[in-house]
Length: 155
Image 1 (spheres, helix red, strand yellow):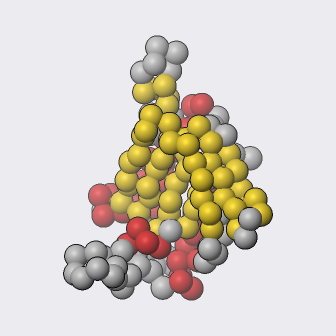
Image 2: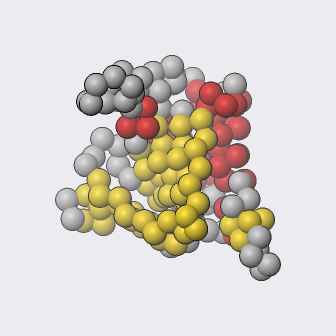
Image 3: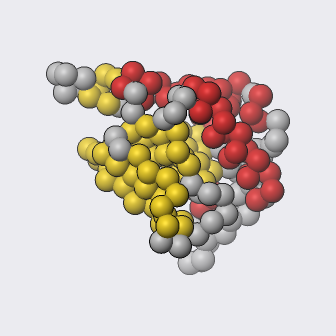
């Protein structure tokens, strides 16, 4: 699993010109699953470690302007966007390969589970895009602050 975190002043998802989700200050997180991620992953220690790291990272400024507060500390929102292209392999040729991405049937279930786990941790603060949809994602990256979390780093 890969999570690309972006601290934002705002973020939104539209599908066919219609608003689907939006947040003010918080995190927009692109969520991708790899071919080694299985339906058992939500009950794993790695899953929980990634989730807790994401909501606990101290990347929001305190009153002194120091990055010292987490998403949980601030009460800011979370916008989750499914993103299989996080597993693109661009090493050969000019067309990316997506053979490292999780099959859609499994990835969809994993994304839904991740959304539910996030909602349990941050009630009323979680919005999400739609798995498999052609989405327009907009955001104002604040800082900019962008960080990658990967399950490979938590095994």
